[in-house]
Image (tube, rainbow, N blue to C red):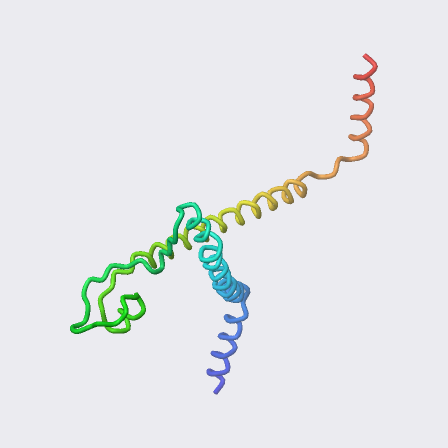
Length: 149
């Protein structure tokens, strides 16, 4: 019985350690952030690409049918073909996922860059020790003498 208590105590210490909690928060925030990037691509980037190209460019519906089931006479949409068991090469969906990844990586790059810049400023302010009063006074005297000449 005491061995199982030790196991659960050890597990509790592991589960509430900072790194595990940080990882859990990172995964949850990352999943939500992925949805935001997916929406940016779907709702903002792709309409702009459609406008610039001058037509309807919907990469998610671009595919190549490799084989159809025998006697299939249904609609020629990606959803219906896959439901019927057709082999479909969905290159457009892959391209959309690649665009999502590139945008996500770009946004994360800029976030890390901004955070690192802010962190460097804070650290540089912390590193500069306060100037002792006598040194500050001597600097003022020096500056006054320079200005008189």
